[in-house]
Length: 131
Length: 273
Image 1 (tube, rainbow over the protein chains, first blue to last red):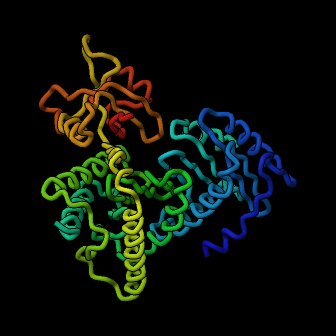
Image 2 (cartoon, one colour):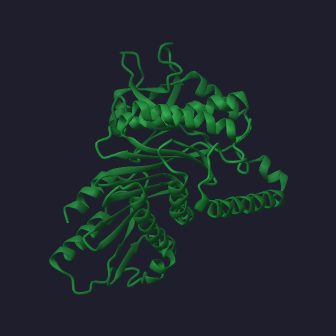
Image 3 (tube, helix red, strand yellow):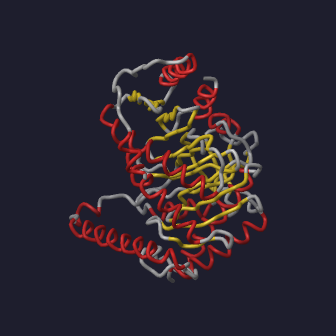
């Protein structure tokens, strides 16, 4: 099941996010993501919905690795949430030794923000909630 | 000392923690190789194996961010946390109304303390391939469990093989892995207290100095669980009532830098260049 979802991931854009028939909400979300990208320590983001995926990372060499991590994290969380009855998942934070990933689902959009460990996660979360 | 002793001690600890923290719905401990070491009474082994299975790929792919130190999944009904504590992963599931500060204080202080005590009795590392704890396997899970065990054995063999291939000269120059201690913040006040110095358990400093034989540890890196970090001078706690309690005395200036306050938990490791 995990592999199937991973295969569905399509990278629509690398350096510049692609916009396909955006609603006001999506426009606002993308604008907020662009702003978040400028925050101290934020190294980029992945935005995925049912029709497209946008990836904007400072280090293009990490695109595939981060996209797969993001995808597997959402899949794993779904299963674990069912197992332990966590309910609808509000957010996921994975602290790595070098980088932190904050992931959340807003409507049909799956968002993953990658940042240095020193970055302000709360500030990023607040900005996303304001979308 | 083998894994059975670790399992028994950790299981007892988890059960006791749950008695005082009823908001912890599930708790279990895995080795670094995702082998089940201990679980609380309410969490079926089948559920744990399914969870490990679900996390397996994510933990593998997290090498892209330097490997997992901590995972938090926040749901509307509860929160799951995976914390790496030295040689083990502690997984806790708490209800949404849980007092996280209290839960963290209990789990992230008690489990490492138990592990340290066990290590004092016998410093042998947790054996990946020792039999799993005193758990009665449930029929449908046996096959899956054996698969995991086989995988672990295979990985272990590969690691051993890789170790054999590495030249011995190289390994002599490598510093030991930096130990990370999780400590509770206490205020450090007083007119003469320097604003750039924290105080921690004397035995932690002693352990660091023993670990890095040719170096004297004078500074430590302090990191909060939201990622704020700073480097400070480090000295042993003076007050005997606070020494050995898993506390870190911190001047107000450092607390402001880290945006934390008394009672919160921080990660502390020796600054070794």
